[in-house]
Length: 160
Image 1 (cartoon, rainbow, N blue to C red):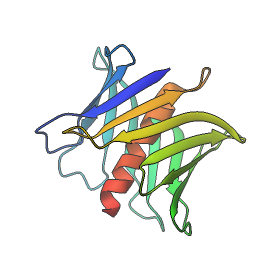
Image 2 (image 1 turned 90 degrees about the vertical axis):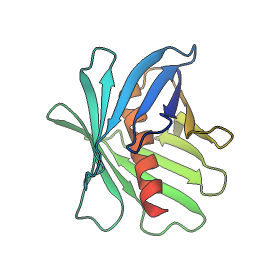
Image 3 (image 1 turned 180 degrees about the horizontal axis):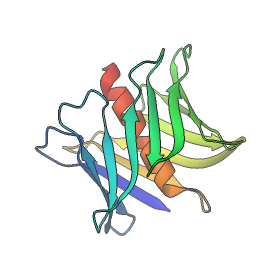
């Protein structure tokens, strides 16, 4: 499935709209203003929260928790030493961890599980707002991958 995450223009929070490949809105992302946790809420079109992203305050590297209701879906952590390429681990309960690698200069990311590509992310710089294209392989947890992309965006914003 292909998604596009586009930040809303003239907003001081991390509000975004997630659309499908036909341009139809699928999810809304609401950022909290002045939140020390960098909290994002991903909601369906009926306003129901389908996932949340929160920054962990006490951690050696940028760390974000992704939850669905009261259940932790994953923890996104930046690798401590990774010259030239950003590397993140998406620690999912059980053996299904994701590895994220990307180029700092090209703003391109790939997510792999067990060596298999499960998603690719491409950031477009030619638009007035930040826009990400996400291609997700069939059979994946789309909400988890979209929340991971949003966590990576928060981590990059915080670093720069």
